[in-house]
Image (tube, rainbow, N blue to C red):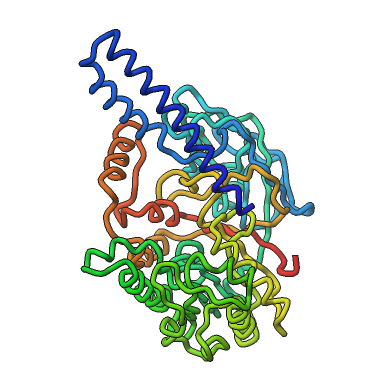
Length: 466
């Protein structure tokens, strides 16, 4: 699964180069045989069209069906989408997570504007030119749905006459002992701020310092290594300090201090040490000074797979979590995210304590860099799944507007999500606002303020021994 993202990106860029070459040849022909003075205007028009409609990183056809399976005992029923309402065929089964499987058909305008489905007071967006099976998230609207009064309307797309409703029943996992694993500082907030901010017992464990891509810090008259060290210090502090905004004290936060983009190599060769690619540092103890308990790797400070597994075993045995929140190994392609979930799985096999449930999240996708699509504050439809995933249950707790604002402020405190966009990206957003009606929140310019601050959080529920 890890190799899919680079392959898809390479194919996307290759196709784009061919398209640009063809467009360039066409412009040359027009300039030579029609009128050379048309070239500047055509180039500008072509660039605007590209930024408005062709700049999305969508690595699959919008006509592809999503491939989801649920546990075989999941209650399901056929519902009618008639008179602008979701009308049940039988009483609604007990359960807080409600997923509506529909066949969407883009209208003509849906090729130019984002197709949307309006669900009561919610809205969920999909790919332009969508034509296939999609999954709407109607969690949090059970009461109105049970009365067959949930309003539904397609905008720039057509809805089918019938759909399938899945009802998934989960306990409130926030009331159990929860360990949240964050590959990098901010991953815990992006995926699970709503969950951890109301958890009765929670431990947040951040595996890396987040020191790479530190070019912006060189403006302080620092060389590349110095900038990476500063960024690593700042983000390590974020991982300890920001959770306090979500009611999690420093005594419930652990920073392991390993280095970005090295976790997979560490697990492949556990006895070898892997220094930072960016800062040149090779002693992780500098990032651990605020940890509330001693850990095995404090002895030598070596960034090795052996030490990483030893740290995780110690944390499992000390905190004894019932629930572990960790990246989805099939959906989230980031190598550090995949390695994080692999590491906790290996550690659980070595420890004298094994959690019961893994809640899996995806902060990145193989196929679609805009998911969740649509504006901040809306619901989270299920992401594209173009190969069959394990038949996991889902848990999608809802976040009030007040919690969503708190989540946005937690993201605003993260150093890696601060700063202005490049001029090119600011121009792209302005073009898309004017021509396609897209919008971004006022809480921050980083794309995660749009993608992560939603009325739902979404977790795949998998037994840990599976």
